[in-house]
Amino acid sequence: MPTPYRSYASYVAVGDSFTEGMCDDLLPDGHYRGWADRVAEALATEHAAGGSGEGAAENSGEGAGFRYANLAVRGKLIGQIHDEQLATAAAMGAELVTLAGGLNDVLRPGCDIDEVERQLGRCAAELRATGATVVLFTSTDPTRRMAGSTRLLPTILRMKGFVQELGGQDGFAVVDLFSAPCFDDRRLWAEDRLHLSPEGHRRVAEGVLEALGRPAAFDWRAPLPAADRAGRAERLREDARWLGTHVGPWIGRRLTGRSSGDGRPAKRPELLPYQPQPQPQS
Image (cartoon, rainbow, N blue to C red; front, side, top):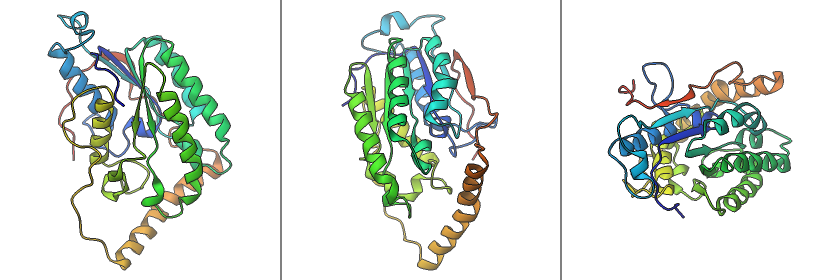
């Protein structure tokens, strides 16, 4: 269920590559756009127009520009998200926070799901203690689109239940991606099959706005129009390219203890006024 409508003057995004915006359109500064930037743009536009509902009067007016920070960094585990992002996010005192994490842990063999839930719950509680509205996410179901992912389903289902339990508390909202059939379509995913395509990011952004009580601009859960199915030979070539280009390097990083986010700063580390972005590069 969406939260009751309220206006927001500030937003902080916390998480990993999902929230960083991996594989969306590239902006002129070299960063990916991502669903969180899309949410910030919609809320900034609304805020500039004066908003409506609870909080609109005090949040509107000259000099009260909408502020946005994105602390997410690709490759981070949920414990790293807590240790590296939570104190900064809490200190910013934003009115809205999105929190997504734990899937990188789940993808690794030997995942300690009890510890993942403990850390995720800790993150959620610390962010909610600041007075912010906190938006959480269930994972999509990878088994309907990605071979070899069936082993992940019991853990993903457990995480889904945990997130929904957290989201039932006051001040939380949940975007249920698991139950949205559109995410079974590979066109919503990048070539690596782990990160969203631009259309996938567009739909997640709409899901967040809906969870925050905004009227739907479109049905983000709806399947895409039917497309011609690739032949068996083409699918085999795609699978081989995926294994060599994406799975191999991922396994290599796991074996050497490296992460794609090592040494990478957040793309928006400060809570600053959000300006409309230039047209993304294709």
